[in-house]
Length: 252
Image: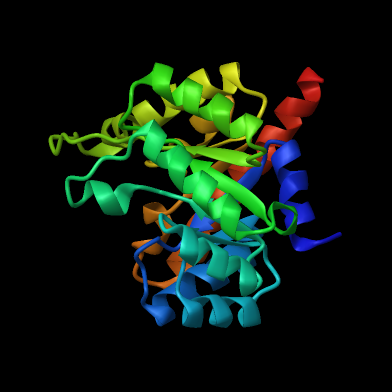
């Protein structure tokens, strides 16, 4: 079974966990720590930036499925040529930091351009649905992506408020929008949904309960200071996802 087939199996069992090193994380040592934590925890995949040296380094150090994320079609095409198992158009946090939003039409244009540069049969293709657009637009976009043969969509929760409470309440509020988007999208398309933004050991089970087939977890892992801490949190996320498969089987 190929690397990406292993990820697809976890996706079909609604227990996939993608550990994200960061679309704008070009620190090779830190990326390596995140990758090792993901591998040792038994995560389903790791997500890295579209940098040639980092892609080469990660491809040499692990047999895990590797996602490469970018908002530039030419970088995604480069990643395919370098052996990425999956490419992801998104996420758009790097733009939001600069006050730039992404419309549904802009996403579709970028997807079309990317498809023109690659052989779709050679790679798994995930697209982030912008959390900043209205939910009706998100649903329309997701349906278009499904028609185009995209393999997976990733939700996000875009918010501008800095007045987020501390503790569990703050963690849940941070994830509230992406969870709501997951519910809406999973009800309206057959394409699998990965929930990201604010997903951590406190909110991961809520993502699966909302209809996610996978979770994408970044800052709860990649912001930690030690590899040991990264491994511990990653393992907790994998354990939560593994418990979800039991619930899915009970419903079948």
